[in-house]
Amino acid sequence: MTFIDTHAHFYDAQFTGEFDPFVARADEAGIEQIWLPNCARETMNDLMALADRLPGRCLPMTGLHPCYVTETVEDELAAVEDWLHRHPFPMIGEIGLDFYWDMTHVERQFEAFKTQLAWASRHRLPVSMHTRSGHDRNAFAEAADLIEKLALPNLTGIFHCFVGTLDEAQRAVEMGFKLGIGGVVTFKNGGLDKVIPHIGLEHLVLETDAPYLAPVPYRGIRNEPAYIPLIAQRIADLQQRPLAEVAAVTTANARRMIEF
Image (cartoon, rainbow, N blue to C red; front, side, top):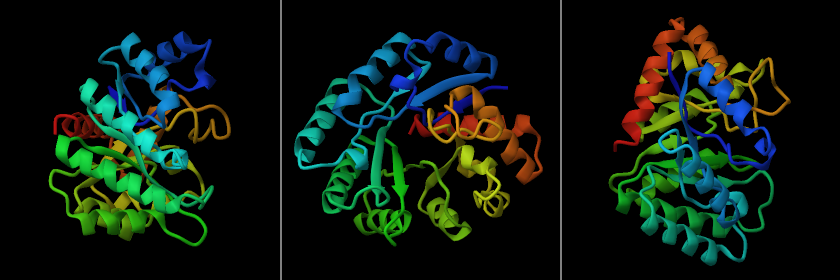
Protein backbone atom coordinates (compact mmCIF):
# COMPACT_ATOMS: atom_id res chain seq x y z
CA MET A 1 0.00 0.00 0.00
CA THR A 2 1.10 3.54 -0.72
CA PHE A 3 -0.15 6.83 0.72
CA ILE A 4 0.24 10.56 0.11
CA ASP A 5 0.51 13.02 2.99
CA THR A 6 -1.08 16.09 1.40
CA HIS A 7 -0.14 18.53 4.18
CA ALA A 8 2.97 18.39 6.35
CA HIS A 9 5.29 21.12 7.58
CA PHE A 10 8.16 18.67 7.24
CA TYR A 11 10.64 21.53 6.94
CA ASP A 12 9.75 22.73 10.46
CA ALA A 13 12.56 23.21 12.97
CA GLN A 14 11.06 20.38 15.07
CA PHE A 15 12.50 17.93 12.51
CA THR A 16 15.98 19.47 12.44
CA GLY A 17 18.76 17.03 13.25
CA GLU A 18 16.51 13.97 13.02
CA PHE A 19 15.42 14.18 9.41
CA ASP A 20 16.77 10.86 8.14
CA PRO A 21 14.91 8.72 10.74
CA PHE A 22 11.66 10.50 9.89
CA VAL A 23 12.17 9.77 6.19
CA ALA A 24 13.03 6.13 6.94
CA ARG A 25 9.83 5.70 8.96
CA ALA A 26 7.82 7.34 6.18
CA ASP A 27 9.36 4.87 3.73
CA GLU A 28 8.40 1.94 5.95
CA ALA A 29 4.84 3.28 6.21
CA GLY A 30 4.49 3.47 2.41
CA ILE A 31 4.37 7.27 2.17
CA GLU A 32 4.87 7.97 -1.53
CA GLN A 33 4.80 11.78 -1.35
CA ILE A 34 4.76 14.52 1.27
CA TRP A 35 3.26 17.84 0.24
CA LEU A 36 4.77 20.93 1.86
CA PRO A 37 2.49 23.93 2.49
CA ASN A 38 4.23 27.25 2.99
CA CYS A 39 3.54 29.82 5.71
CA ALA A 40 5.40 33.01 4.74
CA ARG A 41 8.63 34.37 3.29
CA GLU A 42 10.54 33.19 6.33
CA THR A 43 9.69 29.54 5.72
CA MET A 44 10.08 29.43 1.95
CA ASN A 45 13.83 28.83 1.77
CA ASP A 46 13.73 25.88 4.19
CA LEU A 47 10.74 24.44 2.35
CA MET A 48 12.44 24.68 -1.03
CA ALA A 49 15.68 23.23 0.35
CA LEU A 50 13.76 20.14 1.47
CA ALA A 51 11.96 19.87 -1.87
CA ASP A 52 15.33 20.05 -3.63
CA ARG A 53 16.75 17.42 -1.29
CA LEU A 54 13.93 14.98 -2.05
CA PRO A 55 12.68 15.95 -5.53
CA GLY A 56 9.45 14.28 -6.52
CA ARG A 57 9.04 13.00 -2.99
CA CYS A 58 8.50 16.30 -1.16
CA LEU A 59 6.29 18.59 -3.25
CA PRO A 60 6.47 22.31 -2.41
CA MET A 61 3.69 24.88 -2.33
CA THR A 62 3.90 28.63 -2.07
CA GLY A 63 1.38 30.78 -0.25
CA LEU A 64 0.74 33.11 2.67
CA HIS A 65 -0.81 31.49 5.75
CA PRO A 66 -3.51 33.67 7.36
CA CYS A 67 -1.72 33.61 10.72
CA TYR A 68 1.23 35.34 9.04
CA VAL A 69 -0.87 38.19 7.64
CA THR A 70 0.23 41.51 9.20
CA GLU A 71 0.86 45.09 8.14
CA THR A 72 3.50 43.73 5.73
CA VAL A 73 0.93 41.69 3.78
CA GLU A 74 1.70 43.44 0.48
CA ASP A 75 5.37 42.49 0.72
CA GLU A 76 4.49 38.91 1.66
CA LEU A 77 2.12 38.57 -1.27
CA ALA A 78 4.72 40.02 -3.62
CA ALA A 79 7.12 37.30 -2.48
CA VAL A 80 4.50 34.60 -3.14
CA GLU A 81 3.82 35.98 -6.60
CA ASP A 82 7.54 36.13 -7.35
CA TRP A 83 7.91 32.46 -6.42
CA LEU A 84 4.93 31.57 -8.63
CA HIS A 85 6.82 32.97 -11.61
CA ARG A 86 10.07 31.21 -10.67
CA HIS A 87 8.97 27.63 -9.95
CA PRO A 88 6.33 25.19 -11.27
CA PHE A 89 4.41 24.62 -8.03
CA PRO A 90 1.65 21.98 -8.01
CA MET A 91 -0.49 23.94 -5.50
CA ILE A 92 -0.93 27.28 -3.75
CA GLY A 93 -1.05 27.09 0.02
CA GLU A 94 -1.52 27.30 2.77
CA ILE A 95 -4.03 30.13 2.42
CA GLY A 96 -7.34 30.97 4.04
CA LEU A 97 -8.83 32.46 7.19
CA ASP A 98 -7.96 32.10 10.87
CA PHE A 99 -10.24 33.58 13.52
CA TYR A 100 -8.77 31.59 16.41
CA TRP A 101 -5.58 33.38 17.42
CA ASP A 102 -5.84 37.05 16.59
CA MET A 103 -8.51 39.15 14.89
CA THR A 104 -6.30 42.21 14.40
CA HIS A 105 -5.71 41.67 10.69
CA VAL A 106 -8.91 39.89 9.65
CA GLU A 107 -9.68 42.30 6.82
CA ARG A 108 -6.14 41.87 5.52
CA GLN A 109 -6.64 38.10 5.74
CA PHE A 110 -9.64 38.40 3.43
CA GLU A 111 -7.71 40.52 0.95
CA ALA A 112 -4.77 38.09 0.96
CA PHE A 113 -7.15 35.16 0.56
CA LYS A 114 -8.93 36.76 -2.40
CA THR A 115 -5.64 37.65 -4.08
CA GLN A 116 -4.29 34.13 -3.78
CA LEU A 117 -7.54 32.54 -4.94
CA ALA A 118 -7.34 34.71 -8.04
CA TRP A 119 -3.78 33.54 -8.68
CA ALA A 120 -4.86 29.93 -8.26
CA SER A 121 -7.63 30.42 -10.80
CA ARG A 122 -5.32 32.18 -13.26
CA HIS A 123 -2.54 29.59 -12.97
CA ARG A 124 -5.00 26.67 -12.81
CA LEU A 125 -3.52 25.48 -9.52
CA PRO A 126 -5.47 23.87 -6.65
CA VAL A 127 -5.33 25.50 -3.22
CA SER A 128 -4.69 24.16 0.25
CA MET A 129 -7.02 26.10 2.55
CA HIS A 130 -6.77 26.78 6.27
CA THR A 131 -10.12 27.63 7.92
CA ARG A 132 -9.95 27.85 11.71
CA SER A 133 -12.93 29.28 13.54
CA GLY A 134 -12.98 31.36 16.71
CA HIS A 135 -14.38 34.52 18.31
CA ASP A 136 -17.89 33.32 17.36
CA ARG A 137 -17.05 33.35 13.65
CA ASN A 138 -17.11 30.31 11.40
CA ALA A 139 -14.05 30.40 9.15
CA PHE A 140 -15.24 27.53 6.94
CA ALA A 141 -18.57 29.25 6.24
CA GLU A 142 -16.97 32.61 5.51
CA ALA A 143 -14.36 31.05 3.23
CA ALA A 144 -17.03 29.07 1.38
CA ASP A 145 -19.23 32.17 1.05
CA LEU A 146 -16.33 34.10 -0.43
CA ILE A 147 -15.42 31.36 -2.91
CA GLU A 148 -19.03 31.12 -4.07
CA LYS A 149 -19.31 34.90 -4.36
CA LEU A 150 -16.10 35.19 -6.40
CA ALA A 151 -17.15 32.33 -8.70
CA LEU A 152 -13.62 32.05 -10.12
CA PRO A 153 -13.06 29.51 -12.92
CA ASN A 154 -10.72 26.55 -12.55
CA LEU A 155 -10.81 26.74 -8.73
CA THR A 156 -10.44 23.57 -6.72
CA GLY A 157 -8.37 22.27 -3.84
CA ILE A 158 -8.48 20.96 -0.30
CA PHE A 159 -10.16 22.16 2.85
CA HIS A 160 -7.13 21.32 4.96
CA CYS A 161 -7.68 19.87 8.45
CA PHE A 162 -11.40 19.54 7.90
CA VAL A 163 -13.22 19.24 11.25
CA GLY A 164 -16.64 20.57 10.29
CA THR A 165 -20.18 19.23 10.26
CA LEU A 166 -21.75 16.90 7.74
CA ASP A 167 -23.56 19.86 6.13
CA GLU A 168 -20.23 21.67 5.76
CA ALA A 169 -18.59 18.57 4.33
CA GLN A 170 -21.34 18.22 1.77
CA ARG A 171 -21.07 21.91 0.89
CA ALA A 172 -17.32 21.58 0.30
CA VAL A 173 -17.87 18.55 -1.93
CA GLU A 174 -20.57 20.33 -3.93
CA MET A 175 -18.12 23.20 -4.48
CA GLY A 176 -15.66 20.72 -6.00
CA PHE A 177 -13.19 20.55 -3.11
CA LYS A 178 -11.64 17.63 -1.27
CA LEU A 179 -11.62 17.24 2.50
CA GLY A 180 -8.18 16.92 4.10
CA ILE A 181 -8.58 14.39 6.90
CA GLY A 182 -5.90 14.22 9.58
CA GLY A 183 -5.31 13.07 13.12
CA VAL A 184 -8.53 14.62 14.46
CA VAL A 185 -10.46 11.71 12.91
CA THR A 186 -8.89 9.46 15.56
CA PHE A 187 -9.84 11.71 18.50
CA LYS A 188 -12.62 10.44 20.73
CA ASN A 189 -14.53 13.75 20.64
CA GLY A 190 -13.23 15.00 17.28
CA GLY A 191 -16.70 14.83 15.70
CA LEU A 192 -15.61 13.33 12.39
CA ASP A 193 -17.14 9.97 13.32
CA LYS A 194 -20.46 11.64 12.47
CA VAL A 195 -19.21 12.87 9.09
CA ILE A 196 -16.84 10.36 7.48
CA PRO A 197 -19.36 7.48 7.20
CA HIS A 198 -21.58 9.70 5.03
CA ILE A 199 -18.98 11.16 2.63
CA GLY A 200 -17.75 9.23 -0.38
CA LEU A 201 -14.13 8.15 -0.24
CA GLU A 202 -13.59 9.86 -3.59
CA HIS A 203 -13.88 13.20 -1.78
CA LEU A 204 -11.16 12.57 0.82
CA VAL A 205 -7.40 12.99 0.96
CA LEU A 206 -5.07 12.21 3.86
CA GLU A 207 -2.81 14.58 5.76
CA THR A 208 -0.86 14.86 8.98
CA ASP A 209 -0.24 18.61 9.40
CA ALA A 210 3.02 17.43 10.97
CA PRO A 211 4.43 18.34 13.43
CA TYR A 212 0.94 19.15 14.76
CA LEU A 213 -2.21 17.11 15.51
CA ALA A 214 -0.70 13.64 15.86
CA PRO A 215 -3.29 10.85 15.74
CA VAL A 216 -4.10 8.50 18.60
CA PRO A 217 -2.08 6.82 20.15
CA TYR A 218 0.51 9.57 19.58
CA ARG A 219 -1.78 12.50 20.37
CA GLY A 220 0.06 15.31 22.11
CA ILE A 221 3.51 14.52 20.74
CA ARG A 222 5.25 15.50 17.52
CA ASN A 223 3.38 14.31 14.45
CA GLU A 224 5.11 12.85 11.39
CA PRO A 225 4.17 11.53 7.92
CA ALA A 226 4.67 7.91 9.04
CA TYR A 227 1.42 8.20 11.03
CA ILE A 228 -0.73 8.50 7.89
CA PRO A 229 -1.73 4.78 7.99
CA LEU A 230 -3.32 5.36 11.43
CA ILE A 231 -5.52 8.05 9.92
CA ALA A 232 -6.36 5.82 6.96
CA GLN A 233 -7.23 2.93 9.25
CA ARG A 234 -9.69 5.06 11.21
CA ILE A 235 -11.39 6.11 7.97
CA ALA A 236 -11.50 2.46 6.90
CA ASP A 237 -13.14 1.54 10.19
CA LEU A 238 -15.72 4.32 9.97
CA GLN A 239 -16.61 3.47 6.38
CA GLN A 240 -16.32 -0.29 6.88
CA ARG A 241 -13.86 -0.65 4.03
CA PRO A 242 -10.52 -2.42 3.71
CA LEU A 243 -7.50 -0.29 4.55
CA ALA A 244 -6.05 -1.05 1.12
CA GLU A 245 -9.07 0.54 -0.54
CA VAL A 246 -8.72 3.72 1.52
CA ALA A 247 -5.03 3.88 0.62
CA ALA A 248 -5.65 3.35 -3.09
CA VAL A 249 -8.55 5.78 -3.48
CA THR A 250 -7.15 8.64 -1.39
CA THR A 251 -3.78 8.34 -3.12
CA ALA A 252 -5.49 8.45 -6.52
CA ASN A 253 -7.53 11.47 -5.39
CA ALA A 254 -4.37 13.33 -4.46
CA ARG A 255 -2.55 12.43 -7.67
CA ARG A 256 -5.45 13.64 -9.81
CA MET A 257 -5.57 16.94 -7.95
CA ILE A 258 -2.05 17.99 -8.90
CA GLU A 259 -2.64 16.92 -12.50
CA PHE A 260 -5.44 19.53 -12.62
